[in-house]
Length: 301
Image (cartoon, rainbow, N blue to C red):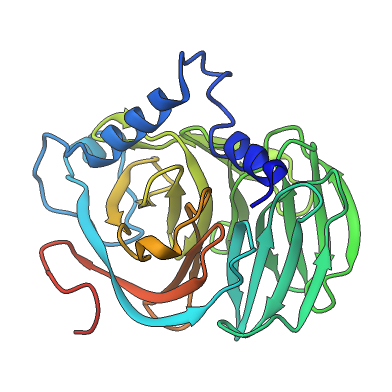
């Protein structure tokens, strides 16, 4: 990996450290890992996926502990700095980052993309989501969002985007976009103009969960990668309460890991309870389900 990529990767993994006034980037990692692993004090039964809870109900529900069960391993471009992942029908869309190397791609999962369009420097590609005949692609700190034709990936227009772009997904039932910016906040937006329409702070056991990154909207729930951990949170967007903490650690062998190879990318497989997950510079993409953490085998039944 070139020195340019190493510098850009390090900056992207810890982009909000200075803003929060932390004394060292290590504090970000320690705090995030501690938060992700801390069990809530309350042990009331879980709600199912997507069930809305008010603040008092959320405090009375424990976070369900889940893990990844691998169903299939698929090929993935090891040069892809994955920032967004989403399936629409049989097509997988992927957005990649790094200035001068950003792109959006489309094609069958596990195969070379049938369509690919580069994002010109200095734009740094981020989260994506499909809305019918169009696709939105965020950029990191370029204050720009790009709307594309979902079939050709051709750029249709650029829209000012005043925030850092991280993750993005579309909640069809609520007809609104959900976006992240690396903090504990999810922001709701108009799907046509990207104007803010609301926001919620994501919490687990009453404590904010920072580092929210790539997003996937599934029914009434939002799934979020948490940078720089190997965990995925299932969130009730009505309250911000985390309803499940998913352990996705240990999915790559040591010889498959390179600097910057962080878990990032989650796409629901339409019509199933399965997901595709991958990461930055990962050589593989995995088709998975999420099962209770008490089950010991990570692959198979």
